[in-house]
Image 1 (tube, rainbow, N blue to C red):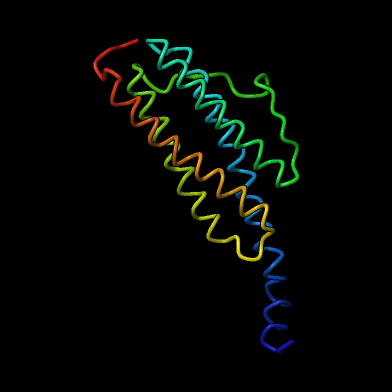
Image 2: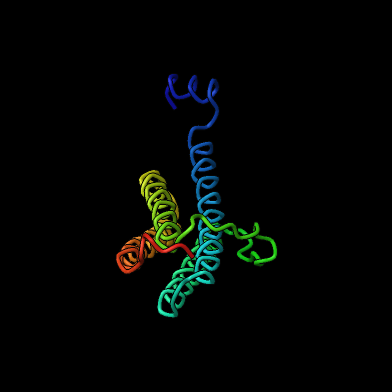
Length: 159
């Protein structure tokens, strides 16, 4: 061990432990955000103006919740969150189009955070890296599916 590393560790603490703790905390926040998004999508599905949009949003919510649970299991945290524990659903807009745009923006934010966390996973267990990649792929597919739903939604209709 060099004197500079010893001094740095003594001054700032173990860098590896604190970095892995930060990544784990970020991933736990992402799990919570993914679960919150799944809850929001379920609520949006209930307000959907037609059956095809409702089914598509239910599918997105189910896949998002499954991705959150998978990531939580890999992190070693309890993967169960009952809907009763979630905050009450509050519509994000007056129309289906506005709600879908809000869902898309939230997903873009999570996607960016997944990229950021994924870049800091050097030396992490392979199953954790794989889980983050899997969740990122789910987010990517959801972006396209949400865009398709937005294209079919009427921005002028209030419902």
